[in-house]
Image 1 (spheres, rainbow, N blue to C red):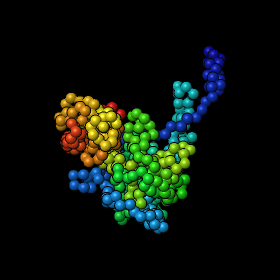
Image 2 (cartoon, one colour; image 1 turned 90 degrees about the vertical axis):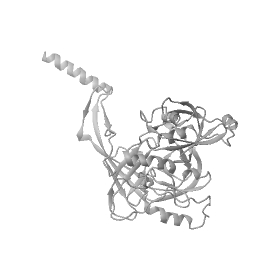
Image 3 (cartoon, rainbow, N blue to C red; image 1 turned 180 degrees about the horizontal axis):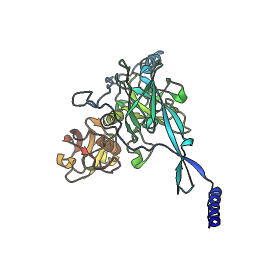
Image 4 (cartoon, rainbow, N blue to C red; image 1 turned 120 degrees about the vertical axis):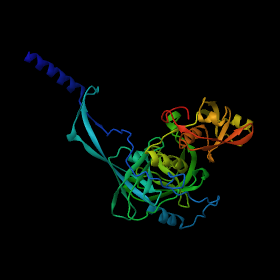
Length: 393
């Protein structure tokens, strides 16, 4: 009997030897828990989630480019830009190639470090960065401009879909911060400046142009929340989460992605999208999608011509869900929604995104084209019955 057991054991070991045992590592599981942070009301009356400052409207007046333009811009913006270093404990497991069993191997655990950039949006220490910079980190460290002290940051909220994260640090005095511009007013061809921590070279400044707007890198649901500004300002690893600035020093985007092998092709989350996401992150630690009960389609050039629109924009209502907020408010099939709370919507995907990022139970005003006339419809969105992966917004 003992001999038989030894033979079986040898066969099993030989089988593993031939197939090749390997080591696999597994990052800590994101349990989706809401971070514990101070969520006391702050900001504007009725809008306690508004913790940033909007840049003043420049009325279309471009800043004249002078020899010291970038010097002045760097002097104003650098103090509000921070370097972010994260540490993640990687817990290792050993197992067979088929995944039939795994065994924890604590003696092989190790710490993985990463770097990125962020920028302050309020004097009391709130800052923006990319979700992918901090999403799985066990510890987030922030280095302030010209200060030797390292700050430990709280992760207030993360939204992986828009790739934005809101952090909070404590400081004994008010901190310098950047204002958020109206990214919808940015024109292709305008100059832009990126500041970041590429390859650990902190507070590096690069300049370029706004190369395009409304870029998507993925199709379908994967790209539903993508509305990138494309820029030729150089973005490298470590720049993630840093500000893309106009020549006034206001933030038009959050630097996020590059195309591998591309030269001068970078992408930034527009500041207006950040303004929609931040209230959710501050209040709930994540995005809680809203629902109004419609399905939308693209406004084609032919439809735009028939409706006497100067260009194909907005989204056309293809279905109104019975007993939903939209039906109760009087929204009808074939209505074209052009704006939500005065925010222009570029296409159907932008409309779905904007609607889902409304604050539930807070009235919203839609600008609707019906029968050749623009009308206003006020409705109150509700919490989405499912998460943002639902096809109906």
